[in-house]
Image (cartoon, rainbow, N blue to C red; front, side, top):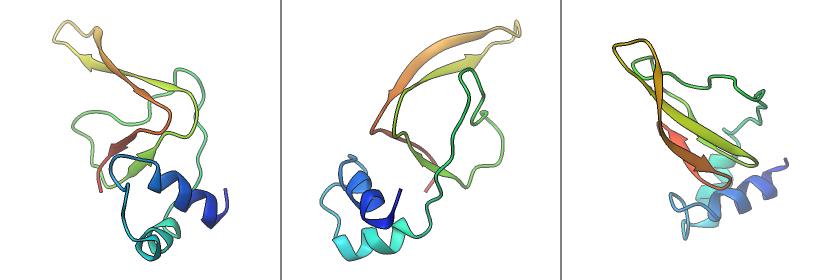
Length: 86
């Protein structure tokens, strides 16, 4: 994605909708496109944060680990939504 596409994507999210375009352009330069395989873990609860994601395509399943060691479904993140830490 080029900078203009990232700005448009950020402007379409609830987190950044209506933000000044100049600020989004500055922020866009800090974004890097990454791809993940189906089933791949992106973040784990309790691990160091510091990354902020905008899901461009697909759907993420959120799971929560239980004491039994089995993870239970806790929700989904859809394309265009954000997650992580700012």
